[in-house]
Length: 458
Image (cartoon, rainbow, N blue to C red; front, side, top):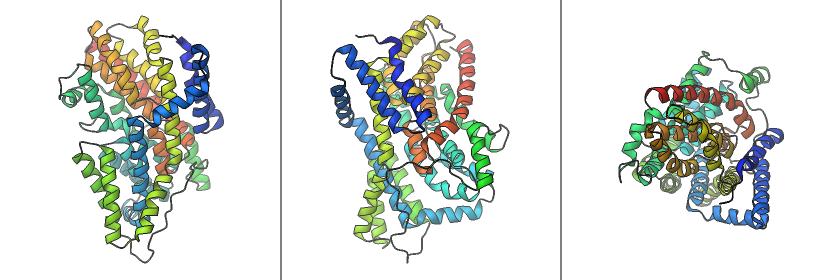
């Protein structure tokens, strides 16, 4: 196996530096991937462009990648239908009548995020869409809204008994022989107390909302901007397509049930199909189409065009996700995870193992946007490592799961960051950079807790 060593760090570091300098996401990812494939081609004496194309084809033909593309696109279709029914606007109007203060608007956003825990994509898109009008009315910067929406998505999904995340990791626990066949989810439940980052990041939000921990950095700048200019958004929101928000039939009086019922069907069908978000959203889009048709909210052609335009509104987000998957492929080919673990191994002992695992895996997750992919690669490596040091296996796997959630939360181009930016109509870099210090606070606190746990129960 060809060893790239520290050179494996170059592509993700290039992406991060360019993202900050260019204040964009897609172009830095594309350049970082190209640099990675040029390096791979040089060391393997192959054509780098062929490697780039082969990786693109592999990702587009990968079952998991296609699943993500369909889920995100169909969520866009469902959102488009709900917006054009008038139900979303009506929900916002009713909520505005009951939410009287800025703090209440933010707490409501937090609680809504905690209530939609089945899937991080579902949470990020639904909560952002639901609360945007309400927080705008109370002069809340979009950066604050995006921070709360994002932090109640993946970080909360990893500490609830059932979600797409817990089911996925549960399957890995079974394949890694940590859990008996069919008992992966039950084993995950015993591990939940060790998924520290999820608890810390979610519980920090009310402290910021109520001013116990002050807002600072770019988030404070956003607050000052909104108070002085009235502009809730900073940089222009990037998207290849803008969602049509005009009602399909302006003569129809909008009702909140047009918004609530599709969401209820989405949650119910997702649960019914064993937390399969794709099957859930497919059924929900079909139900919503015929429900709106029956209620005469739009004609057949209007509803069909809305489904496609809603899907199209997610194209920019999907392009960023595609590039992030290619970056992950570059990192896998250059064996980045193995390099980081090998580099950290001289510093390992039983007590510090959970902390080192969380620290090193977080670096990988934040720089590469890998979460589920990180779990698939790292957990089978961590299990024998923990057993070798006679360390608590579930504690160390919990550190890996925490690292994946931290990456989803803090990476500037992670899928959840991209979808949060889409639903809140907040520039992706504005969102990522303003949120980064708060993710950093949660990260530092989590590091301290893992050190304590390492010396007490490891």
